[in-house]
Length: 217
Image (cartoon, rainbow, N blue to C red; front, side):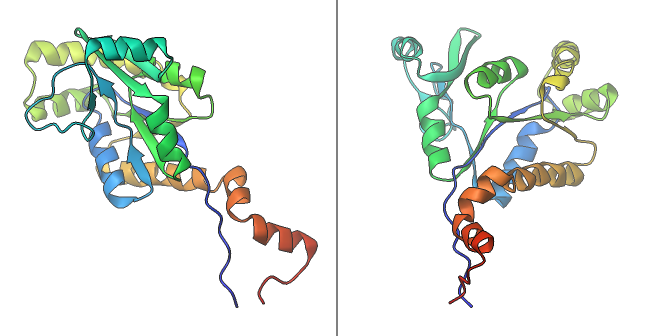
């Protein structure tokens, strides 16, 4: 019996948001290690590279005039200015990865997610929730990166961010990391089984099944 013919299909665009300390970055990193068909979008920024950052890997580093020019050209799916520096996601880099069949993840906040929905209403959105605010506070403290004052500010910001959960397609509660990772993987698996994508992949199989002809020869 011959192997089933599978046609290439474009990847999907995922937007993943979470309050600081909810575990989004760790979950996405684990997903990237496990799933070779997933790519993390590389943003453009006007800030200077840090010591461990590599151009084209950590960010696409550009000067401010170049970034402003790209805004004028409509090059970005979303962009924002944070602490005097611009950050943005370009249409071109995301589209090229998706056309190659990769699922692309954007790690952005709820405001960036709103911009993405306006330009790409077909995007799939996921919000990572902590199990409780006390648990979130403990995680922020355990990181050892912020002062008590900064942690309290992040907790207040978290409540505002979480209030936008209803704008997302999926909610993943990160109480136990392994369970949350399985839930995140399940979302990607289910989305890949959507009829529209499966129809592209198995066009020949469907044609033979519907016509009643034998394609095993």
